[in-house]
Structures are given as structure tokens and as C-alpha cells.
Length: 487
Image (cartoon, rainbow, N blue to C red; front, side):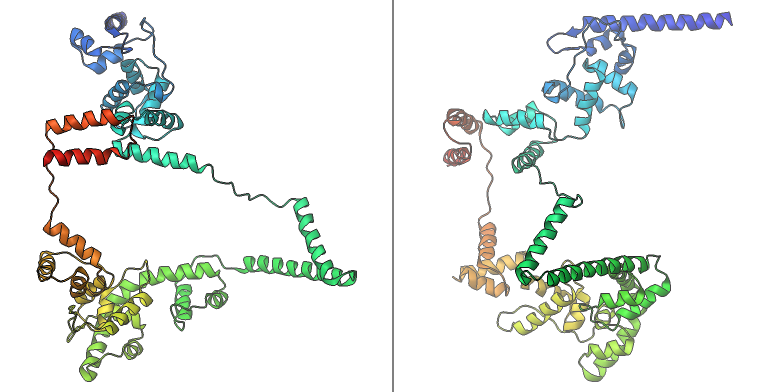
């Protein structure tokens, strides 16, 4: 037992000696200009890992004063960059022991290191940072130099975006607070007095009529309050059972999808109007894939039978025979024999068909609902791909493939104007879009790198005119000089 105690004492003594040795070397390696120790030299002298040296460092034995940097603006850019590189060695969130190591490495107290570390992992614009950046901007400092002075954010663009948002927030001022307080007695009395004055203006000095009007108004308010409380108490707020869901679907079926009387349905179910509307939306989303899988064969068979007999489609009859709505039949049908093609041709294009398809889409799939082009294809009895492409053309969209560009170049070579080329390519395409695509295709922008001589002259030009011209005019001068040198 005595031997074990002696061994422990020896270990403790060696640790204390090593800790004193590390602390002594750290004090000798202290750099007053940077305000921290040169730990690389300590690691080389002791031939120990950096983390072990920091763990052995005893701040109570050190004669080096610990820095206090309570504000982020007090941190030098080099210190903050070094802190970001150093904390990357620790996985996850820093523990108390990790913070002690960071404090010893940076020679900054733990609370200030924790503040800077939080800024590293979650960069945010503060009032102090904004004021510092605003002072830099007033001096005419470029954004890249500001980023080097404040290396908090991920990039220069992120720094500018954060500054702009904070500036807009400051310039707009605080939002007016909405008062949700209860009415005071004085406010209530003032409203009653205004009501009495209005009744006196209407009935004159006939106080009997004025009193009856006030009593009728108070009676009406009590009835409305009682009706609200009674309705709130009688509303069913329990969970929806399968029978309740089936009853809801049964009550909604007779109505048009865009004209459902939710008040009547809610009264029949004994539930709130918003609860019935929300539940119906949920059931409708769940019902669509089930209907497509369960009734696809039946709908397709009915469509095939009708098309074979009449060579035309009556979706109302199909809906009646299958027991689904017309829109559900259009979405579930998989039979497509005999569907026509619809390729845009300016000579044969029919606006009647285009308006018919556009009306169907707006009626059944208003924004932001996604358009089901299977239903559109069945309604128009045209191939789905052609319906999708035609709908894009009607919206003024164009996919500039090689063939389309080649056709535009060919028509332009024949002397055709841009508006006529747009009419040849699409019904709703603008001449501006054709002109832009044509110029991008025939005259691509060539990016020629600037030489070292041109860059030097640009820097001299910026330094010369920085105090004379606004910064908004400098890019044009730089561009003119670059184009002149390239030519």
C-alpha cells in the first residue's frame, strides 16, 4: 500500500514538473506584438503533441497576462482566422476542457473565446459589426478588403448580403406593435356615448325611442354572444372515424368541386366548417392514388367501349357508368388508341383548341396545383407529350435546342424579322426572346483574360479616381480601359 502511494506521489510530482516546464517555455515564447505564445516552438522543444502541451499548461503559474476581448470588433483578423482553423480540430460542440485548451492557445479568457467560437459556427450581423462595416464603406474600402478585416462570413457575397439586409432592417425602423389589450372602461364609455349621440341625432329628444334602440342593440349583442358560445359548445372536436369520413365524402359528392356549401355540411356533421374543409382535402389527397389503382381498369374499359362505338368521348357518360367524377375518370384512364398529334404549325394552328385546353387547365388545376397532363391528354384526346409542349408554348416558353436555333438562323438569313420568326416558332413567343437567343447563338461572348499590364493600369486608374468619382462610375471606366487595351 505504501509503495502504491509512493508511486502515485511520483506521478503527481512528474506531472507538476512537466506542467511547470510547459508553462515556463510558453512564457518564454510569448510574443507581445501578437499577444499570444508561439506554441510551435514549445512543441518542438518538448517533442510533444500540441494538445498535450496545452493540457499541461497551467495559467496560475504563468506570468503572461490573459487578454480580454469581450467584443468581436476587438479581435484582430489574424486572431479570428487562427481561431477558426484551430477549432476545426475539435469534432462537434466544444466541451469545457476544449474551451480551456482554446483559451490557452489564443491567450484569451474562456468567455470571450466562447463568444468568438459561436460567431464562427453561426455567423450573424450584429450592430457592432454593422457600424464597423459602415465606417469602412464611408472610407471607400472595397468589399474584399472589408472581408479580410472581418473574416466572419463564408464569402464576400454572403458578407454583402448580410450587410444589406441589416441596413434595410435598420432603415425601415421597428415594426409598430399591434395592441391586443382588452378595451378599457374609458374606451367602452366613449363608444357608448358616440352611439347615444348618433341615436339622438336620429330620434331627437324622443328619449323613449332612444332607450328602445339601445335596449334592442344590447339584446341583439347578447343573442349573438349566446349563439357563439352555444355553437362552440356543441361543435364535435373528437377524432374522425371511418364512418365520419365516409359520411363527409357522401355529403360532398352532390356539390360542384368549386361550389361546396361547407356551412350546410358542417351543420349536418356537427363539426366546424374549417375542420370539414381540411379533412376533405386530406381525404382527397389520399383518395387520388387509390382511385387511380383501383378504378383504372374499369375506367379504361368504359372509355375503350365508348370510343369503339362512337369514335368520340362523352366523359359525363363514362363518369356515370363508373361512379367517379369526370376529373377522376380523366386522370385514371389508360386507354389512348387513336389520339391525335398536335405539333405547332403557324398555318394550321387553331386558337379554339388552344383556348379549350387552357380553360380546362385553369378550371381543374389552378395554381399552385400541379397540372396532370394525363387528364389533359384524355380531355383533348391528344398525345400527352404534345399537350405538354403546346402548353409550354402557350405560356411563352421555348426550349432553344440546336434544331430550333438552326431554324431561327435560317429564317433570319432569309431576311425575316424577329416578330415573324417568333410567329413561326411559337404562338406566344415574343420578338425580344428570339432576338436575345439569336444574338447569343451567333455572337457568343468571348472572355479574354487580362494581361498583367492591363491589370496594373486598372489598379492605377482606380487609385487615381477613387476620391474624385463615385464608385458606380468606376466599372464603366475600367471596362473602357480593358476594351481599349484588348483592341
